[in-house]
Length: 400
Image (cartoon, rainbow, N blue to C red; front, side):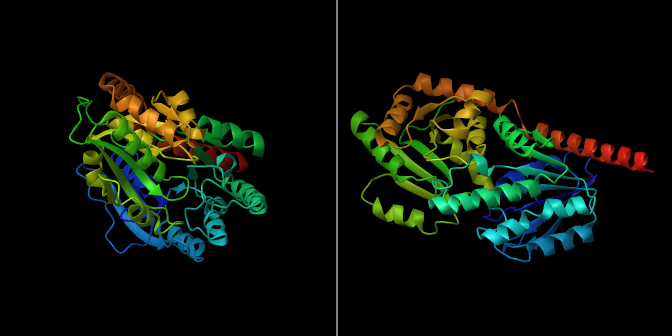
């Protein structure tokens, strides 16, 4: 199978680029894949396709740009040129741009593949029905939220024209199947990027690092985390370092710089900036726990799966998709009220003052992460493509 993947890809800073990197890493080792063609966004740096393991040929074709109105034309042209046997779209609703029309045009690409009779799967990381538009940084205006809802429903119907829409949570399957009467929605879990050998769960304690990782400024805000850890320092006397790993959300440029300025009086707060792929293991291994300072959720959390793969305890808001992941996949953590700094401080303190409890949570999360390695997830996509192709062949024979 010559498989094309439409996605952002490192060194891109567009959302879901890290997921694509790890998915490609595992796809290329599958015997059913003869060539991978990555239809990516344009970047100044060279695409990161150097892997230690042997695998199939990888072709890079940069053919779209974030917020370009021409994306639908350029990606379609690229598909025509490379002639793939199948296409996988790695999507969320703002993948091609944060401008409404640009985003909508990009999301029409699966429908284009259907018209061209190219087998295709959309991996849809979130659905608007489960996103708090205000908290997630889309809009807090009630009229605009209704408009987004209408536009979102229209775009979802377009996306559902794909042969299969894969979602990462059972709740998404239920919502799409019920609301849109769709019978082509399939649960394929998010999966764990890398499953390292089980750690010894020992951590550096001078200082003890408390880390958060992501793109910040919309529904991921770090002020409360800094204040909560400062409170835990005062109540316990522990040597704690705040590690804020990642960058601004594209919708909120300058957010982390302002936080850094506003909290410059607080000691031991470290901002790492963008984290390169090879730096991720060290970042997690040196952390005592991982905090999710979210006011909302927009899909299955890649960071939670990463934290699990490194055997880390986690502190999570008791809301939305994170709570469902705990229920569905077996992750464990301390929960807090996302509106309360005091609640977050209590959750952090419960872990950093009890080493046996921290290790217990880390072991449970490591076990949960091993249930769905990304190699298994790649196999699920390949099998789904085989089913789609088989059904299309049967249909052609029946028509003939």
